[in-house]
View 1 (cartoon, rainbow, N blue to C red):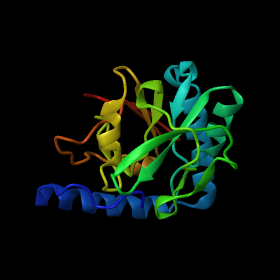
View 2: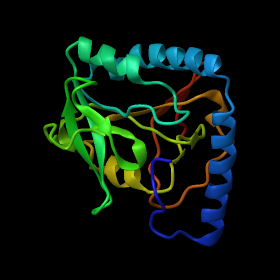
View 3: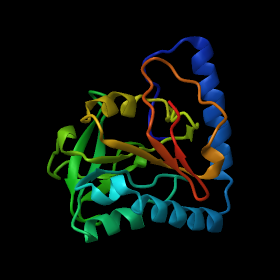
Length: 204
């Protein structure tokens, strides 16, 4: 998992999120490795073709953990095109994400919080105001753009810090699209979800 438990939520909402999280993670974990690889390539190709991604100069992304879609080829292509890449590092003490600039996926990335690939603490620190496009991780999404994370609320605290108009794009396998994601007042939605077969523009 990417995150620990966050601020306590109303019991029914917490229970609904927990149930959906468990169901979707089980379905994602059960995907055939070959299907996961093929799906990852399709997601990456579709994100690369998005106008918001194409024109972005500075992109905040994450590297894959567990059964998440493999963003590494897309991130490497981003670097090869001369774009600036930022990756988040968990500051466990303050429970926030710190953004770092990464130039080399081998030299600048280490095994971090809970084993997640993260930027080295020595990598240059960046500001949210520099970001033009965000690739947002998550467990489940719906067609309204509602997002279910891993339970720590890290991205719900980070996403409001970006400039208005910054594209918030999520890659996901089709099994991660739910009929409805339970959400509270502090849950932040994404603008689009890209799956191997669909491009879901959020209906707000």
